[in-house]
Length: 342
View 1 (cartoon, helix red, strand yellow):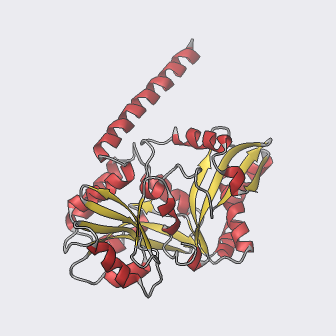
View 2: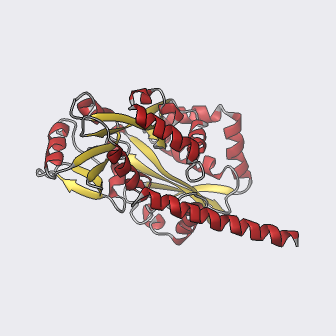
View 3: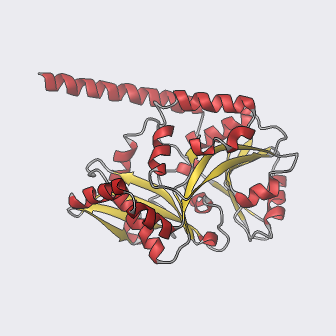
């Protein structure tokens, strides 16, 4: 991965729950999960660009069944996108910057500057921790669990795996501290061939002042800018409005279904909120995120397999757990309100 990692998701294949396949020559690796007979690949094979056609062929031949490359970007899309035996759909978009341009755009926005200053004025200091210190640090786990408690759904996995603290080799970790205690952190994962980074996680603990995430992200990206790195992305925004133009080529049934999910799934996953949050940092560009499936027409089965990759099981079960969590939260709020009224 350090030699051939080009896709923005390349380093995420080391995360828990992802299987890895190695080519016979030992020079290439594919990270994937298997759901309802579909191998859902995390982005694309990690290999040299010259080897990509052969590695794709070898991986697809090694086992029967459908293969879908989720989070596909330029190289593999150029290779497979026009072939009649493959179908390509757009399922989101990701924002990208040159790190030095991030700094310029951040400093030019008075609202972002105010958020950064608000956290700093509340005593938040951002420090880069060595990975040896950050790995499985109990205070970082505490922040993570506090953050996950605020999510509508149970923890998602695959390319949004929250449990990265056990394997931080090669990553960079920036910790927001208040009075010496962590209140949030950012994990950067490398994209070596592009001299870049993915902001894999940006976590805010319960005691973090407003502006903590903005301050921590800004500090982290300024650090990679100072190192001369050339690329940074905040990762996929599912069903992003910025992917709407590219998604016009999606099948009509898929466009209708995704529009319904975006409109009615907000109780569990705030698509608009994530889109707006990443947009406020003024990306230079939004890259469409593709799913490329080895079938002439993209099927509901493949879409279901992608969803199951993220929920680590039946998507309906994840929604049911989300509903139960929401009910418990409503009861907690009600008890607090009644106690306050007394």
